[in-house]
Length: 189
Image (tube, rainbow, N blue to C red; front, side, top):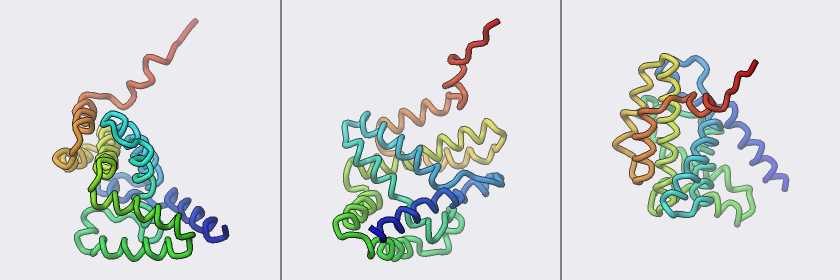
């Protein structure tokens, strides 16, 4: 139990790891990796339901996909150009899992491998969900005046694979981030 508690404390570190790609568009205080993981997991669940896949598995894959960033931080795409990130992530994952019970470590490793290989419907959905979250965040940032965030949307568009994710991305283009609450607000006198 002691090592599981340590691992869960480490998971909390993602709340303090900045999602560094947003620095490139001018944000001084970007959201955390944990914030990204939360919405991306929600998107994965929804996409899997739309695609008739295992929603719990897709969401679980995304829940663990950035766990290595507790130790190496989030590296935006420009920084990744200079680092063999795949090799480093394998080493970090090995170290993170070595003290956990075998069944737990194996489950987490399988989720990570499914994300990286995209060899199942849930792995493909997980990757689409990861990308779509960046699309949603970029749309929100564009509305706040960060026009360079459009680059995020332009970069993810050709990478999206599932039909449901493509439809969501298309709908995202014409959406307004605050539309969800405007009909709920009632002012009375």
